[in-house]
Image 1 (cartoon, rainbow, N blue to C red):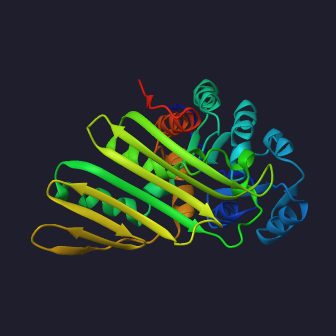
Image 2: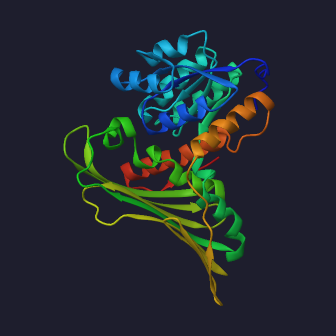
Image 3: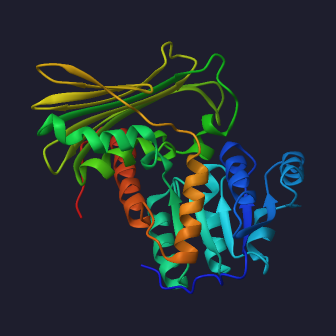
Length: 333
């Protein structure tokens, strides 16, 4: 828990944004539409993109994130850049007395993430790790319907994204994206949020290479045995060597199943099958941003804690170790 002083109701929270990509643009849009904040500056990797985004939202472009986190006229830093840099930017921002919002993962290294959660408490600053998958229509529908299928025994979550050709960008870069289930941490965070603690992890993964730093295809499959006896399988793949797109979440229980295929959901039981309404995925970055502002100004609770995200990262780190060693990894408290 944090016990920092909330911003004055008569002053605006001064925000610096790191990044110029998809998430950063949604953050900027949310910030300029929020009455309680002032977007002071944007720092990005490419000067041309940084200048263009800053001009679009009538703010200042800064050459580097190092300069941004040291500015005295910034209270909150939002980190929406490549996964590899999340940890070091978060550390620098906290050490400079800033509140932090960072897109998942907090770090591609579990030990560093542990240190950062502890540092935020020491500095008495907010550290919020974005997990908008918990706010989306699929997750909300799952939580509303899951009791209807009885005692659970198996879950399968598959996201496969063919790309022909594969883009040469940071999401296909070993170093910049990280291990697949760390870079795509939301796949596991859905599970830990719904089903709790994990006992054992098995994982296998493969890359199809095009050059040393970039790959053309990634495919990863993992199994998780939860403390409640549930067995979960996660499949994650992207790139040129995949041929059929899939976004499917299945929950199987003794009284029925929940099958979500894309944006379509169905409850399957012995007597009948019932369609499930799945809400939109639109506007979630704005919702996350506004919830953080409500928390800072009014003390309202957030939908996710740093500790919850850190635990999921621990599970993802176990999957990485399982993939490297070929061994079953046992998780302890």
